[in-house]
Image 1 (tube, rainbow, N blue to C red):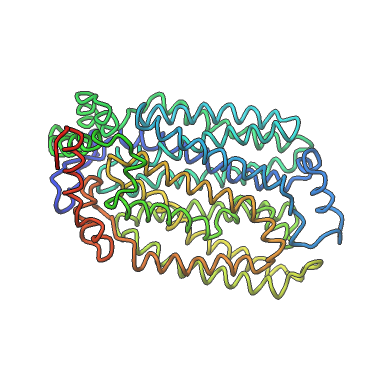
Image 2 (cartoon, one colour; image 1 turned 90 degrees about the vertical axis):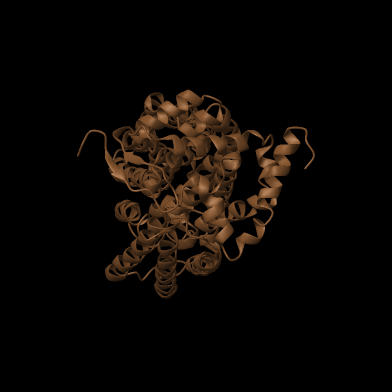
Length: 517
């Protein structure tokens, strides 16, 4: 393969010429380490909250319920608001930080926003690893949450904007792939540190420093996206970067399209208010619903409480962590499937197939637990226990090649430039809000709904699959700046919101120039 990369044929309807250049691949890999940090934070919390040393120091009530037989229902051992706050405080902080991240992403650029995220991550890791009391532990989680808010705002935008159209989906999913690798890494670390007494949990929390440093160093060396540079008025620098990342001198068509999008974006003084305009309703609706549905698949409940969940189902401590490692590995491998297939079979096919797979696996899990696991005893034989793990893996694999990566990919590629930062901010905010809700409520829901928790989530899977079937358009191989013409104006339902799109834009531009419409 030549050093300049290999050519990518442009999709029908666009003249953009692009090669997959080394700088694009390296930049995307380094940027996607933000997902590695996010994934590690998701995975590590469930592992340390199942460690006796950690519970004894910070949550002695939970420690007693876990280790004294018959003291509480199998399903209610971990039902503690403080324990849930340890996990969920990260997402509440991320929700708040994303509003500030929207400003920095637009004004300072994608690269500097990723750098800010890395700094927050490093400080949060120091607080967590050195925690002496619950307050210090929560402060560390809040700082990590601020990092999540900034990283989840900037990284998907960075990846969507720097990647050639033909492989945009695959490169964007690098973020989600790194999330899954982070979860697996955390599960492996937890499995090892659970045998180190009494400070193994400190090592688990401190090793989050590795992805934090990778993101920070990576943000120092990557180039900002042409879209961001042009949007901030640095036209020549934007053109030079575009030429560099595309590996060709024939960049005028793409440069002019980004320039035109930027010109329109400059007319928008209040991007959040602009999101509510009629022509932006389809993108906003889909972005919000994708985030809500992603959380109501039940995936985060399973992933960040996996060791606790398996422990509740009767697995011993080592076995529960081992099972979490297995599900983490399935998560990684299935995300690789998504990278390969998303730009070939499209977004809708992956989401619809996964809906069937997730529904069936959750129903089977619910039935088995309803029959075999009661409040104070479990009849989960080795065979049934293995089968439950297989069903959990079936569910996780379906999520990992569909709702996991596509929940981030689709919003990042559908908003026009003038509302892209604001739209991504709303996307991250809604995602973290509902992640917080699920994280804070799951152990209490498990206590009250018992095996019915899986039936609850399977019902939501049916709802979201119907939404995809009827209301989600295909965005495969469509250049970002052509989404309005080639996607929204062609969709049977959403096109009604685009009828007066051109007139509305002209009125805005004329108004900005002081002219009458």
